[in-house]
Structures are given as C-alpha cells and as structure tokens.
Length: 165
Image 1 (cartoon, rainbow, N blue to C red):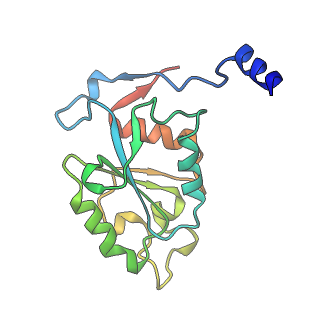
Image 2 (cartoon, rainbow, N blue to C red; image 1 turned 30 degrees about the vertical axis):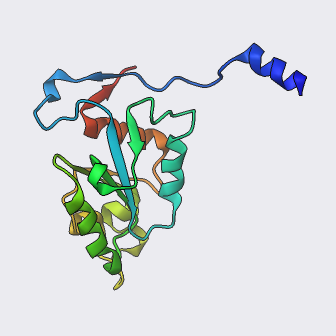
C-alpha cells in the first residue's frame, strides 16, 4: 500500500491538459453563450455507442467540466440538447417536450450517423430517420459512434469558442 502511495506522490497528476479555448470575436453575438454550458442528452433509440463516447468526455483525459460543460438532468437548466439514435416514433413527443422546456437560446446537436440521417435504420417504419425530421438541428456530428474529440469540438463550436493548437 505504501509503495503505491509513494508512486502516486512521485508522479503527481498524470494526464493531458484539455484543449485551451479562446473566444472568437468574429462569432460573438447576443445569442452566443458567455459562460459554462449545461448539456441535456436524450437517447432517441440508439444502440448506446454514442452514449459511451459521451461518458468518456467526463473522464480525466478529456475534462469536460474543465472545458466549461456539464450534463444536467433537467431540460429547464440546459443550454444544449444532444440527441443520439434515430428518432423512434414513440420518442417524437418526448423529444419535442424536452426541446420546448429548454430556455432560449438553445442549440440542438445530432450525435452519430443515426441521429444525423437515420443510419442503418433509415426508412424503417419504426423511425422518423434523423433528428432534423423533428427538431431544428444546429450541428451534426457524424460517425458510428463519433469519437470524444469530435464531440468536444462540436460542443466548443456550438458554444462559440475555438480550439487553439
């Protein structure tokens, strides 16, 4: 036990720093977000691959909260709505209710191929294809599933910040 403790004290905090962000003055507008963003995620019928990648953002390697983002359970506190999976017919009303409960300005991000265009489920009787068929989408992040770097870049893009380096 002491050997492990000495090793931890010797190494200190190990990991990469999150990407530094800087406000882009050209994109500043009254609707731009100025501080940290609260993110509400809705799974509209996905295979949970995108959710695993979203959960990876909360780990120490990506440091989602250090970049100014946090997940919230209530749409009333959310600035950004992320949706994964093809929108199933049973989820349309719940997704619209969640969108309507969010305060203005609100942004919607479609995460993964299924949320962007329906993915492999496109054309099925049980789905409405992508999120854009139900809600106005501000950003689409393709991939099956998209990697955490792409998700973080998308959140930074929606928030009006740009990555350095």
